[in-house]
View 1: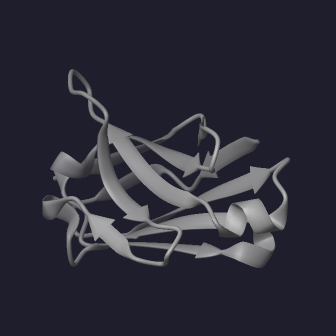
View 2: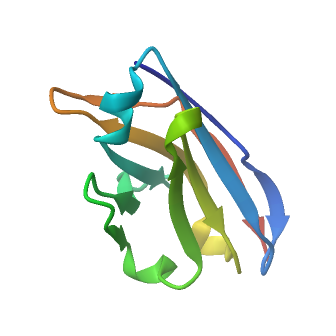
Length: 117
C-alpha cells in the first residue's frame, strides 16, 4: 500500500486547507474496511492523532480540532480527506495520513501545514 498526501501549504490564521491522501496498491474492499487517520507532528513534539474514521464509519477528533476539522473518505477513489477550517498557528505541523488494514499500518510521507498569525 502506498499513500500520497497533498494539500498542505501556508495560510493565515482563520483560513482553510483541505488535505488529501491517495491510496494505491490496495484493493477497494480492503480500503473500504480500513480505519483511516490523520496525524500531525509539530516541531519538537510527538506525533499525535488529529482525526480518525473507523471502519464502522465513526469519527473521532483531538479536542483542539473538534468543530474545525472534518475527516472523510471517498472509497471509489481510495481517497482520504481532512478539511481544516479556522486554522490557528498551533495547527502548524507536518500532517500524515494513516491507513490501518486488518494486518498492518501504512503511512504517507507527510505534508506541511504552516499557519501564520
